[in-house]
Image (cartoon, rainbow, N blue to C red; front, side, top):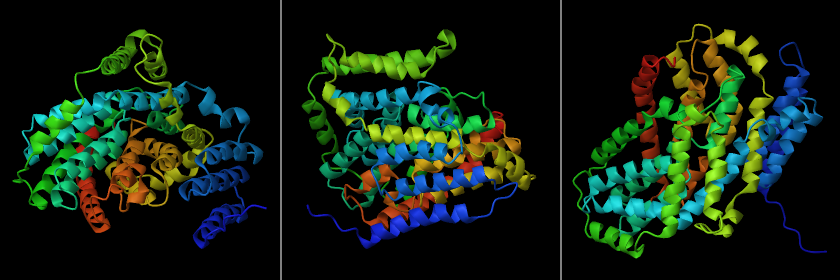
Length: 461
């Protein structure tokens, strides 16, 4: 017999928690509110979330388990449990979106945009910070939030080249990468997050469909808010007058290393333009917006174009795609009737601003114990129902308030983007927690005084 790896004490504790929590839910007696179906739903969902949050088995297997549990426990039918795969082309768009992200990274187009913009700063620190933040949001927008890791790597390259590791200046630059990588997911359209937001909103309005402007319309103020936050940190850290040595020279060298713009970069730009034009004209051609993410990126692999190598397809995480579809099914088979019938009346009279700030604070708390994807999948629908019961017009508003917490964290482990950024060892854990707590407080205040009044003004609430 081969050697078997002994299970650590920490892993044993995780398994005990994962198994015990669903059992505790199953032991609660049923009544007219806590029905047998609801009990089975909660037990299966909690088991799924624990498996994912504690990373006990591969994510692919975690994703495969949930729909089966829903069916065998009598929560729903096979057709409903697998609806995310068959009700639209959203999942296909997610798969091709990943492939497009890796193909775009391979062409080098995004690097060229960042380096060229940084050269225009003439090596001065504050302009560099503001330009990096601007360019970061821009490349996340044109790549549909798929350039996050590349931007983190680019920021790390800047910090390393300018010898800013473990300095206040370096911390702010890496903070930009966190804001752009994690935060832009809440305001720019991507099939992945769009699928979850749509599934949640449909619990309140079954006819609701998301389009590529839905998130920017609700969340564009996130951008100026974070410019305000960064400017506050420039003053707080007393680095607003910092001069950089060899800053411009570094970016000029990096840009020169890319050479002339390549044929592959041109094709990548063409595909981006085609996707944008398709989305902009959606009201004219009336076709599903998901088609754009399935059809146009494939052009990069066509014979005669060959702007991306087939090897990038191997990088697509199929396990995560299956997991995402299962997260969507949480809202599909969820507890809408229970929320609408029993919980909504309990919030009667609650001021809408208080409710929305509560959604944001709930997201901050839930980030500690579950992934942003699982949080949005489980809570997006119930919050949408509660929000509309209070008089909120837009069914996505409450989920957006929740999702703004995507990068409002205490510890790096709470978000993959933050963990990737912290892993480059440019700051201490103390530094990470310090600036994130300050940023968190500032964002909650600015959310209350800017975003909520804007939502009132445009009739969202």
